[in-house]
Amino acid sequence: MPHSIVTETCMGVADCAPACPVGCIKKAGSKNEKGNDYWWIDFNTCIDCGICLTVCPVDGAVIAEERNDLQKIT
Ligand code: SF4
Ligand code: SF4
Image 1 (cartoon, rainbow, N blue to C red):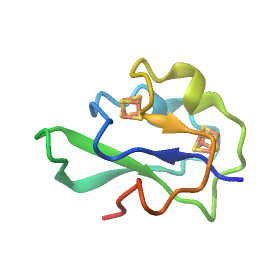
Image 2 (image 1 turned 60 degrees about the horizontal axis):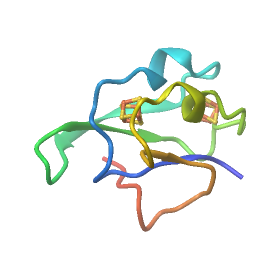
Image 3 (image 1 turned 60 degrees about the vertical axis):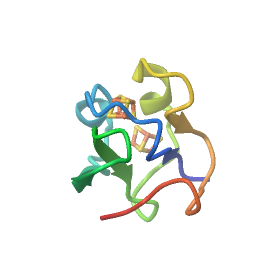
């Protein structure tokens, strides 16, 4: 199952994006409700390796589930 980035928890620093082996973590074109840039995962490309979850410094920003309800895509 693909991973998701919880839009309203993401702090936008993007340790995750360069660590993803398939380049499927994308920068959103807008900010979240906290005013941070946020990133999102392309579910169709994610290979479920879990690296983003390991490198993200923010508790709860990455989850090992496909959650369209928590991850906005822009
Ligand atoms: S998911 Fe984590 S590492 Fe990636 S941009 Fe958001 S807070 Fe940063
Ligand atoms: S689980 Fe792996 S492939 Fe999927 S977004 Fe995270 S780092 Fe990329």
